[in-house]
Length: 410
Ligand SMILES: [Zn+2]
Image (spheres, rainbow, N blue to C red):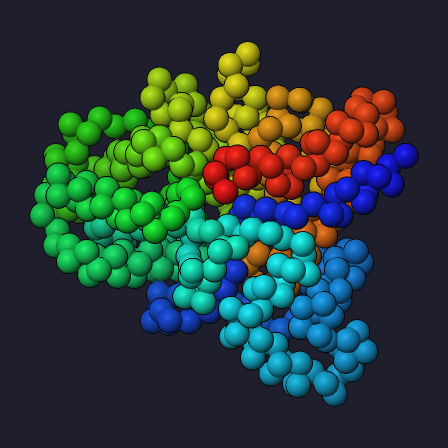
């Protein structure tokens, strides 16, 4: 009975609404001390990227074959390794061409590049962009934020460099709060003019995602104190700027993606319930928020956020991507998806993303895990007589395509 569903899912042209193609290449233009330490893309044997799952190992073999033309035999021949490393690097540096090959192999129609946009991806109709707006939050001395660990510090160093570039581009010199806010607005305007389909925050890498609602009237005083090095004022200023950008997103009618996923011991920073105040605020509750990676591994909190509002559906969306996908088995992911899908209110809110980070082959690997997991979750709901096959097909299309198309107005 479900063969029809399988075929239908395999033929859906995906919208991959969260990924970082050309991630490593983008940072190669930064001074070494300002590069993100996770922005690397070396050739790796499928065994190394399988996370212990034979399924993922096989998916990587397939991706190498279909995108890079590497045979299983060559991959497993130690004598060929140097050649493959060289060839891999060459293809990686020809991103304009490689991206099309990867997207075609994966059946991805549109990919929303996230946070940073590699030059080779500009003006490609199949690539959309969601810029990171985080650098705008950290205009002053950030030394107080540097003790969390090397990953966090490298994100901060990258933000610092990005803000420097933006300031030069806009000829901005630091005056007072009013001028700074005008600068922030100008940067956002420019992103939108250039076609951004949303904004992204990944402050969880360097500070808590809890932001107090601070009135803009306080801005001038906070700005002056923060400039002099007063940490508590600086944090409040960042909070104020986050709420400001959230309000701006409503004017632009663009969603804001928030990174929530476990990365170190600062677990309270990474909890999506930190945004709870925003969803009950009379104004900011109108902003559309995407909880990335379903708040890995706190899927129940993400679910709670998306269901909050009861009879009045709110504007919280759930992205399944990243470790939920590329380091996971589709049967495990299907269990998470099924739990979400048992609430019909979430059918219009769940969206697929590869979160491609360490090489374009992850676009393919993610698409395979994503399609398989959606199929397994829906087939199990059909088997349990919860939904029929036609309903399953509608839901599959929503998760893999329609919900993203609608939210990002593609
Ligand atoms: Zn991401």
